[in-house]
Amino acid sequence: MKIKIGFVNFDMSIRGGGQQVLCNIANALADVDPRWEKYEIYVISLIHEKGDCAYELREGIHYYNIFPYKARIREVMSKSGKCFRRYCEEQGIGLLFYVGVYAGFCAGIPGRKLGIPKVFCDHGALMNQWDDIVVRFMRRMGSRYSDRTVVLTRQSENAYYEKFHYQPGRVITIYNWIDDVILRETGDYDADSRKILTAGRFSREKGMDLLVDTAAALQKKTKDFVWEVYGDGELWEEIRQRIREEGLEEYVKLMGLTNEMERCYRGHSMYVLTSYREGLPLVLLEAKANYLPLVSFDIVSGPGEIIENGTDGILIPPYDTEEMACQIYELLCSQEKRIRMSECSGRNLKEFGKEKILSQWMALIEDMVSG
Image (spheres, rainbow, N blue to C red):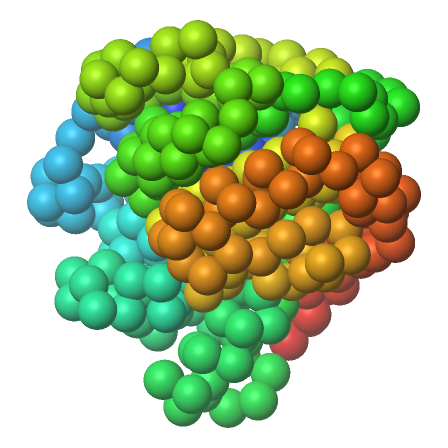
């Protein structure tokens, strides 16, 4: 019997980690079953802030958008429920994945009336925003009105059990995988490079302000570096102004948004993550696949399950920009250390391999529809 699977996201018109993961899974399932004999896949976007879907979905994947404009959560909650349920019922969708906190809350509550299995996919980390009462409530509702919760790290899995007292098996960890596009474009590590790389949305949680602070501290130690930063977002102009104020225009280069990030890892000495919070950052996995030494704050979730401290990268106490600048400087000064870390980058890549992780998703699908 054909399994009709719906993947729900709050806004597929913008680029982000959750949207990328949703697209990767949907496309991979389509590739596994190109004749649609087993899986039929639907992607549902609750709103569109920026026009059309920002991702290329495989031919045959059904795409549906409820609000073709930017809408607040209150409007989505009050007006989308009937439309969302009607679409699921008309299409005969038999399994739903809510990808992201907003999707879990806004679709999970009205979706509880649908008599089909549901999975809440938390692309972030519970404890990163535990003190945010609103976000904590949305996470709890998304998880509560689903039959299973999928998280990105074992640390988050343990937190869900500890905080919400679920029965064993209710929460499972499935890592993100490294996309085939990234693996096809990997090249040799450039041990002579003085270029540092960062990529991400210019939003509060991504810590671009901490990047500027780190670069300012690094510039006092050496002027022999260039830090390239890819991405865009609501804080782009604010960060550009801060770079000017700190006199860093020569050292920190805002590269803008690119649709070919897979080609941007080459020619860099290291990858640096300055986020305040993450789930399981795809950019660290992509940088690891390109054999770049990794430097990251040791925030609550993510980097600690990717980086082996001192072996393939360096974990810094959260938000200590002076220490991060010191460690980056030491790496820049030691080609031998960078080469050693680069050579160690591939040691745990299999944990984030597509074949292994896709098999976990397929096993979950089978378990949900058969149970």
